[in-house]
Length: 154
Image (cartoon, rainbow, N blue to C red; front, side, top):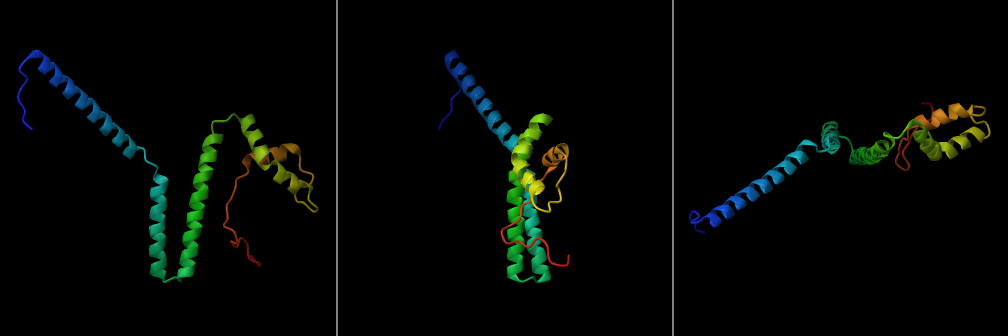
C-alpha cells in the first residue's frame, strides 16, 4: 500500500481524524488491558501455587497416590467452598447490623433451635439474645462427604 501526503484540506482533515481515532482506540485497548492486569484476583494464583507446593511435597515425601489424590481433592474442595463463601461475605458486609442479624437468623435459626430443643442439648436454657449473637457470628465449615472429622480418643 502506497502512501502519499494529503493534497488538499479535506484529505488533511480526514488523515487527522483517522490518526485521532487510532490514538483513542489504542489508548482504550491499552488502558483496559493494564486495568485487567493490575486488578486481577490473586486467590487463584495463590491456590495454583499451593497445589504446586503440595505436588512437590508429596513427591519429595514419596506419599502414595491415594493419599496424594485425597490431599488434592481436599484442597480443591476447600478452595471452591471458600470462594463461594467470599461471595456471601461480600454481600453481607455492606448490610446494616439489624439486617445482617435478620439474614443470619433466617440462615441458621432453625439449626440453632434444634440444638436448643434437643434432648440433652448443651444450649438448653440459653437466652434469646445469646442465640441471636451466636447466629450472627456463626461461620460455616465445609467438609467433603465421608471425610473423617474426629477420631475416637482425640
